[in-house]
Amino acid sequence: MEDFIRELECLRKAIDEAMEGALLGYPCDVPLIREAMVYSAEGGKRLRGAIVLSTYKDLGGDGDAMHFALAIEMIQAYSLVHDDLPCMDDAEMRRGRPACHKKFGEAMGVLAGDALLTLAFETAASSDLPPYRVVEGIKALAYGAGAAGMVGGQVLDLQPEAIRRGACPGGPSANGRAGAAGPSDSDSPGDLADPENLADRVRLMYRLKTGRLFETAAKLGAILAGAPAATVERAAEAGMHFGFAFQILDDIEDAAQGGVEEDKDTLLKRISLEKAREEAIMGFQRCKQLAGSGRLLARLADHYLVTRLGV
Image (cartoon, helix red, strand yellow):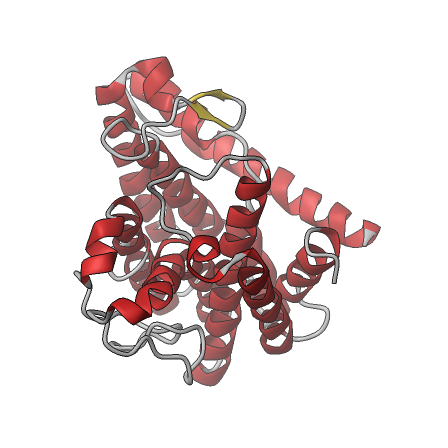
């Protein structure tokens, strides 16, 4: 476990250093927006970027996938900036310090998020990896971050009433097929207008908001390494299971600290804490099976199972 923690820390530091260089070295004539971008992109575990880099290396990548690790971390940072805005979650603090909009103003919070999102794709497009892989990677990144992924999940997270009304008539599964919402092929939400399927709608929100970007991270590593389609699919599914379980775990820990907002729809509220915990355990275990022994994603799942869930 100590070797794993050191490896994760090395990846985090490498991404932090590359992020600082990318932002400070970017040609920009407006110091204020650069300052807000740097402020917003600082900190965090860098798990998504680490998954990109480690999956790429594990699958035989022989170049540098850092551009895409930075890109997905920029997207993660932008999403947090926007998520904290008064029109969204209206959060004053992020990672123990004032949220971007509290430090720089609401308008600058919007613009800093916009700037990080657009820079993410410029950064990915600047990769020296084979152009056809870069294009496929950019497509995967856009899909995971957009309406079919993280943004769609954020809409559901902000509108629990829309979830209850079945406003989202279907959604992509872990492997991207429309109409399924489960992390596996056998899991389907049925009729999303049926009030009996409220828990499935929350699961869909988890997969889109959190699972999709983890799925994208693992998928990117495989695509950029030139892995076969079946391997790309397997890596993506492992990432989706990890992200789904990660979100449940986050809710469990928020609940333990009294941090769950009353108007937030969570799986804990729909099926009980214990049943949600069981789903998190199954998600991490399935991730380990798909990712393969020794892979960073599998070791991450095992780390959370042991240290956070006591398995």
